[in-house]
Structure formats: structure tokens, C-alpha cells
Length: 139
Ligand code: CMP
Image (tube, rainbow, N blue to C red):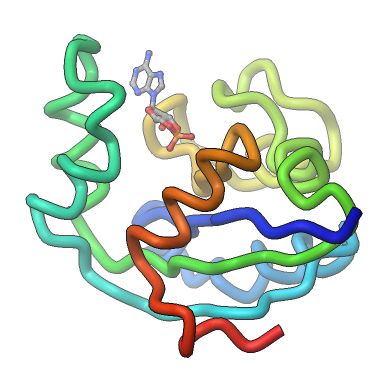
């Protein structure tokens, strides 16, 4: 089925001017960008978005990193969008990411790993709603 997922192009990628290169990989993987905006996340947004990781040792650093520069938040649409996006992103740790994936090609480290993608349809909806209103999504 055609579904939607949520993506973030992270500060390490925007800093290196890789917004287009990352988006091209997403599009080549069969995903369509149906919403996109460049924002500088506030601390509150980063802490809220990553609240599920609150107890993890890397939570503070993760929020520091995600507020360290601009990000591009996107809604992606395509056949089986969550899985399709996860496949093209590659493993969280670039050292484990497969050839041809975004993280293998572009990520700097497990933290500065260039992209975020939703891990389930349920979380995709929550994450899309966190950053976008319905009128900002044009399918
Ligand atoms: P993301 O998909 O955005 O979801 C949580 C993020 O936490 C993850 O990508 C990584 O950027 C980061 N992360 C996960 N594990 C670690 C770790 N061990 N150390 C630092 N950051 C991590």
C-alpha cells in the first residue's frame, strides 16, 4: 500500500550542503517528498521529539546535536514508505550500514548519522503530526 513516513535531514548533512544529495537518494528509492521545510529545532522540540529516548545515556548529546544547526523535516510517500525509507537510510551506525545507503555514503558517526526515519506506521503518524499541519502536506 502507498503510505507515508517522516524523515529528518540532520545538521551534519545540512552543514555539508547535502540536502539535495540526500533527497535524491530518497527519490531514487521510490519515495516522493510531499512536504518539506528547513527549520532550526528548538530545545523543546528536540526533547519532545526524542522523548522515547529520555532515559538513554546519549539523550542530552542527541538533543544538543539536533539543535546545533538547521534540519530539513520531510514527509515521504510511497509504496511501503517506512520500510523503503529505512532500507535506503541504512543501519543507525554508519559502520554497519550497507553499500549504497545514505548513512554509508554520508554519515559521520552513530550520532551525526545524516538522517532520521520513522520506525513504524504508527510512529510515522505521530512524528508527521509533531512537525506538520495537514495543509502543509501536498500529495
Ligand atoms: P535516530 O533515528 O534519529 O533516532 C535516535 C538517534 O539517536 C539515532 O538516530 C542516532 O542518531 C542516535 N543514537 C542512537 N544510538 C546512539 C548512541 N549509542 N550514541 C549516540 N547517539 C545514538
